[in-house]
Image (tube, rainbow, N blue to C red; front, side, top):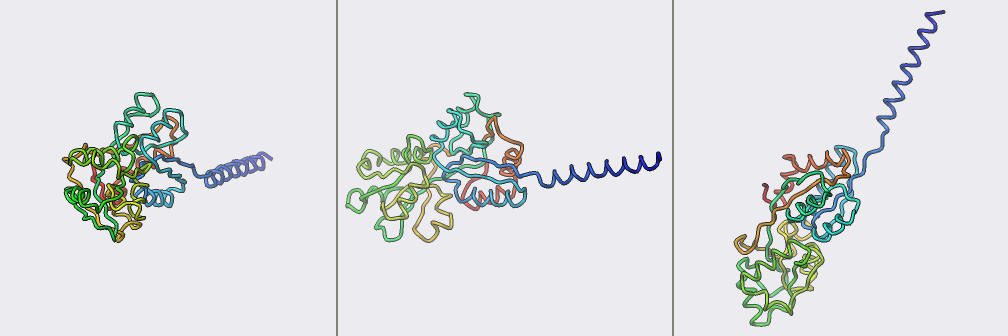
Length: 261
């Protein structure tokens, strides 16, 4: 009788173990929401796809200007990870008590002059031809991201000011809400040229649609790009954060023209 009870007990224990294992195997993947600067669009989409395949967790990517995301996060927007094109915005969020720490630098960005095929302008990183185009009438519209809330737009403004072109360009400017929209304006022909992120110029969607020339970094402040976990970030978000700092992820970022810290 005791032996029968003991065997029954073992069966129950084994069944409970199998049930716990099955529940663990069928545990739904965690969802991760990322607010990212628009210059990351193509690189981050590739990285997120790799992470989802390897981890089973789903990643929702929202792209926009870093300044607008910062304003939303200060108001309590439910993002798990913020990838800013300007590290000063991450520091601002940390001082407001919204982040786990001060985050870490994931890349350095670059800006350049993009000229679509068919434009009469030259892809001249010194911006000298842009100055000449203002004089001879070749330039009607010039695209940049809005410098009020887009770091890439602010750096474009700095470069144009250093080249003595900012005031002269005021009536020609077409401003995108973010650097991705500024690139769309240029590629679509809405502008004869524009200052965009190198990471977008190297993306498959823009390759072959125009000419691109880097603008010397001496003309603007550096684009030190920093990411940070929000206080509500889940363990799955921590995994994605760590993946973004790994060598495979850095290889992808380098392919899109980012410089590693």
